Structures are given as structure tokens and as C-alpha cells.
Image (cartoon, rainbow, N blue to C red; front, side, top):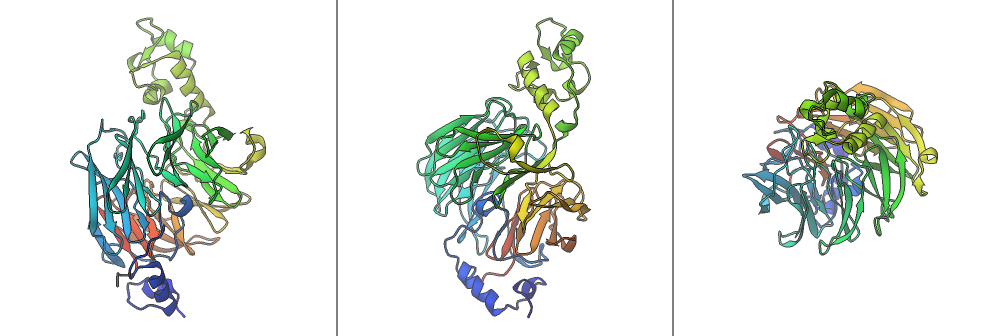
Length: 483
């Protein structure tokens, strides 16, 4: 008998009895409330969805629907018959609700931004992915803060926040844990982890992160299902805080100076991987030598024009934490330490204890095939990592042994979207707009390469037997049609 996947992977309209029954149960024929993909990377930030998705998809191929959406880098979230998404157009920050069955717009809400962030080439104020508990949806914008709506678009609360002080703009997403909304605000100065009430938006606690500089990692409540901690990957280390009051619990050293990917959970373990060019800078020059060579006005501070040629001038925007255009000795010391101690790494951690647990908690490390943006995927006792250039590395989650080492997916260029999976299929989408479907196993088995026609930065969402992909101008759902 053909599998449910095979009955529609070629675009046909045949269905197995089990597959059709499942469609009714999850509500493709009339969506029921649920939390199919409620936040960045889906249920429990796992990157794993239920119900599968077609092997072959693209505009006109297994396309249930496709609609134009405003620009943005956030991923769609799916709950029951609703999809929530953010955007930025006509100098307005937008929250949108779409009908999950048809893609039709149910409502949109607009907000005037504060000072709009101007950062990386692909940066956008609508980069944070929404989080939902099925009844409320929480959205976040760097130049605005947090805002919460109910399913019908009624604003319930807002929590304004100052624009993060980073070179690239904000990138982390909010998550919901019980009655809390958690948001990591790592920036070049004044980093903190914030918890506000889901029902009223009022601050519950704030944990300062003075050791952390800019970062774009989304926090992870742990353990899954009944979290005691909030785990954050940031500058040089992985930190855990009490979810009750934000008190520091434990930390593990050994990460890069700048983290973009987020920590992920496996049975009894946490996994984190990061790469940054900052780890290849080498030893930073001594402050006194820089001052002696370039401090033209003898004020013991350095403007960018005063910094001698070399890594200090090259990385001046990172070193200048408060963005006032000059370096102080303290600013330089903190940033130089971050560069000097930075290590590109993949790491497995056994969580628990208190304080610095590095020596006893690190189960294994790995130093090849590391991602810059994409968060790793724990799937089937394996850790999947995707790096720029379309290289996939798969590790045994228990031992760190390489099952696949930097195998080529047939995509080129940068990768921003994180890999996602359902059943025995893993999907990797390149910034170029090529979506690669791989059969999970101990050998690289590319099932399909699907051109989407436009660049892709956002991580796909899997729900209702469909994979939802946001491109530069569209949101498309690929899978069974609405009946």
C-alpha cells in the first residue's frame, strides 16, 4: 500500500483511508483549535511537526494556496484555523491573521514604529516570530516592543521596549511558558532576559546579562512540558535562569562571541551550535598599543579614524558598545575578551547543578559544519546542522559521532531558515529559495529539490499536513487542498 505521503507527493488527488481520517481529525476539512506550530520552530521549539508534507512542492505544485504578504522575516505560526504573521510596510508594523484553510486575510493591525532599526542587509523590523497559546498571540518588534491580541484581533495589552542597541537589529522571538512571555534582549550594552505576564503584559522579572553582547538566540524553557529554567545561548556561554524569578541557575562556557542559532532540547540533553567570523579574528591588540599609535587628541579614547589598521578598526562597530563613535578602555577590554575567547562549536550539555558546570556537563563537542543562523534540529536521535553553502552535518546525539559530515545538499549561498522535519522527512530551505527534502537516515538521501521562485529567510511551519513557507513577497501552503 502506498503511504499517505506518496498519495499526494506528485500532486494527485488520491487519498488513503487512514490519511483522510487524519485530515478530518486535525481539521484540514474544518480546522479545530490546536497548537500545531505555536512559536518559532514549532511545538516546544522542536522544529518537528505532525502530519507530514509533500516531497515535491512549489508554485503550482502541491500548492494548497499562496497569498501576497508584506515584507518581513518572521515565520508563520499556526493554531487551529488561524495563521499569525508579522510584516513591515509603508512605515507600519503589522500583525496579520490569515485563514489556515485558504490563506485569506482575517484581520491586520498596524502600529507606528519608534526609531526603525537599520542593520544588516536582510534586516527587517518584522523579524521576530509570534507566539500563541491558541487564544492569544504575542508579537514583538524591535522598534516597538511586545503586543498581544486575541484570535479576533482585539488588542489585550502592549509592553513598549527601547530599541535594542545592536548593529543588525533585533532577531530573537518571544516564547510562551505557562503564564509568562519570555524575551531575550541581548545587545551590545544593557543585555537582559525579560518575563512578562501573558494575561496582562506586566513585567514579572528581569534578569540582567552583563556578560552578553549582541545576540539573536531565542530562549528555551526547559525541561519541555514543565520548565524550571529558561536557557539562553549568548556571548561565550549557555545560561540557565529560574523560570520562577529569573535568578541565575547555571552556565556552560565555550560558545562563540555572537550567537544567532538557538538551543534545542533532546531527551535529558540540550544541544547548541554556533559559528561566527569573530572566532577567527585572533588575538586582539593591546589597548595601550592602540592608544600609543592612534590617540591623536590624547584623550585616552579612540574614534574609528584613530584606530590603527587591523582587527580593531575592522570590528569597530562591534567594539563600540554604546554606539557613541568612540572606544573607551572598558568597552575595548570587554569586546576584546569576547573575540579572544570565542570558539565556534557544536555542543551537547547535560543540564543541572549551579554556577559554572562546564567541566562536568559537556557531553561532547564538535567543530565542523557549524551553522551561523540556522538552529540545529534534534530528530530521530540525530542532530542536524546546516551551514552556508548548503552543507549538512548529522551527528549522533548521544556521542557526537559524525554520521554525515558536510555533505552537499545542492544549494549554494547563505542559509537563514532552520531545518524542520516531520516523519522521516527533513526540509532545508536556502536563502536562494531552493527547498531540499531529505529522507532521514545514515546516508544523504535527497528526495526532491524544490525551487520556490523567491528568496527565503523565514523558517517554514508544518501543520495540517502542509508546509507553510514565507518567501520575499508571499506565504504559500503546500499539501492537501482544502475540502
